[in-house]
Every structure is written in C-alpha cells, then in structure tokens.
Length: 241
Image (cartoon, rainbow, N blue to C red; front, side, top):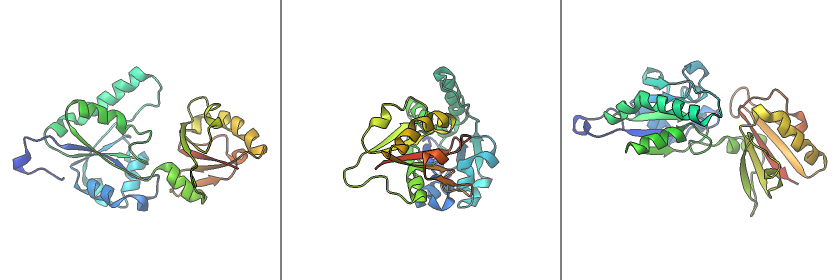
C-alpha cells in the first residue's frame, strides 16, 4: 500500500474497509493499524473529526492519521431508501477518481465493516466500477460488550441471533439462544416493554452496554435499569435462564 510508484500509475487503488473496534483504541488489530498507516487517503462517515468515533478511536494508535488527506460526509439517519442511495452515491463520487488514479483509501468504521456498516453500501458501488475492495475486520460491539459485562455469548451448541432494534421484536425474542439487539437506542422504550415481563418471569437475563470500550462506557445488568434516554450506541444482550 502507500503512495503508488510510477510503474503502478495505470492501476486503480484499493478501497479498504477497516473496522476500528467498539471504542477502546487498544482493540485495533495490527492489520488495521498497518493499513491505516499506509493508506493514502482516509474516508470518514462524519465531517467533524472531533465527533467521528472511528477517527477518534484510531487517532491515539495511529497519530499520523491527523496529517493524512481525509474525505468525509455527514450521513443522515433516514430510512428513505432512495435518499440513502443518493447519499451513498454522493460520498462515493467524492473519492472515486482517487481510487481510479491509483490511490489506496481507508474507510474507517466502528466495530466491524461486515455488521451494520455504512461501508457495505460504498463497497457495492466500488465493486460495480471494478475497483478492488478489501475488508479488514474489527472487534464487534457485541463481542466487546460481552467482555465488558463479563459474560459469554454462547456455550456448547447454543445459538446466537443478531437482531436490529429498529423492527418488531416479538418473533425474534421467541428464538432459542442468545439474542443480541443492536441499533436499539431510538426504540429503547418499546424494547424494554417487551423485555421486562420476560425478565420478571425469570425467563431471561438482560445486559446492556453503552459506549463500549470508551471512557463513557456504562453497563446495565437488567432491562429495568436501562435508562429511557439511552444512546444509539447501545448493545443489548439477552441470555436465557
């Protein structure tokens, strides 16, 4: 990686989707650190670097990132598929030519790029243009949250289900095994309404972690104690008794 030599000037660059983990800079993998150091351009999902979690996670481990060229765009939180497609296309077009000119780009994302990440949309656009894409995994928020809570996600043949907190959970909560609810902050009241009766009946144990791995991390050991004003960056883990 790195700035390309003259013999590669006719070759397109590589788009790297790099997971920086849930929040603790020490959780970055060696491969992620190496890729960030050697990238020509850094792509961020938020324009303000001070408020971009992915950038702030990487900064202490890769301080030279502050001197690299960055391309960013504030993403709207919308469910409008047409609007989303327009936003993603707009962001991709901002650095598409750099890739075609032979520069390697590192798209930073919290957690892992393969789980509920904006990078997925960008990756599809790049692949359509024949651009090489490489994913560098990061520690997921639910693995980090389980460690923070001091619990195991699964044992023996127990199943694990990853669930979006944006939908109807009635059927998902009937699934056997550990349930992990992500993107839950906005719908926390509705989620608590479903979890508390099951918890009171002694059927489940609920753990919730906010801002996993960060100085502001908070851990809750029951659905009842989860505050109503919980943040978007919350992971809920539901264990069967």
